[in-house]
Length: 355
Image 1 (cartoon, rainbow, N blue to C red):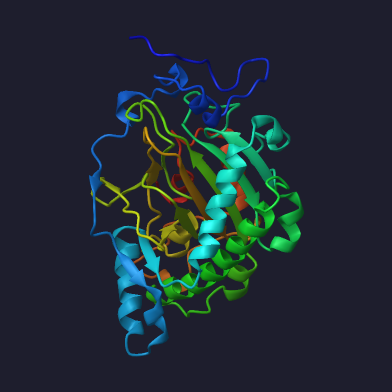
Image 2 (image 1 turned 30 degrees about the vertical axis):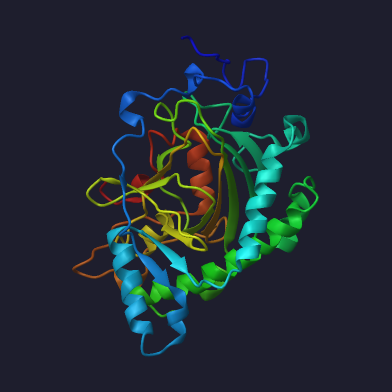
């Protein structure tokens, strides 16, 4: 049976079709533009229950704290990834953020169109796939991205519809920024640095909320929500409501990240790889889709301020660990992705010395 299909998400006359719109069309096949080459399709992931989980409440206990720091060190070294529980963000705040995101994506396209943008430098932009104007192959995702730290600077740019969006997402955003500052202290300590290393730069750093919607997809084995990539920043905190995130380990095996109620996912980005002089690596990850449920994922992406260069910490450069990375900034990254296809090119490779 030939399934019902629709054309591309962005036709030459500038029309725009979101993944949510395609889902409402009740297609039985994904449009051709979403079908990935066989080598990029999501096959062969393991469901792994042994991925690291760190209980942050133990950091308050001086006798146990060194053990938690060591757990974080091993997780960062082996995976560039861990989940955190007892992190201090109430369940109600996390649920409100997921609800606000879901309500936004459920709005008719006409009510979101004014936020539509393909310019990666815009402080708020709504779109589909990675960049609906440039993408050769599309990904089964709609997104809203907005700057967030400090919220007082950026809140007025955020969507006014749904009416509760600013309040609900704002509460979560502030809590995620606070958690990130605590996590950075732990990660720096796990590298042998002072826990207050770059303290002001971290507090005043950039925070971008990438609010992602992966609608139910008729042929999830042929496409992805996001292709394999690393995040550019220091670290990313992810809140999700369904399974779908997969990470690659150092043996190049894919692992499905389990959904743990109340937990948040922590991923290291390219800036952390640079700062640690390669002791820790940014984690390669991708988003899969499914045929039954819409998945919401809210990624709080943290980096140093837009123009602030990150370079390897001098304490982590020595004869055994020679200088391995050039300096780079969030602004440099935005310029890079403006001109590159992130499916084919990785920003971190540009920063490696003698790569």
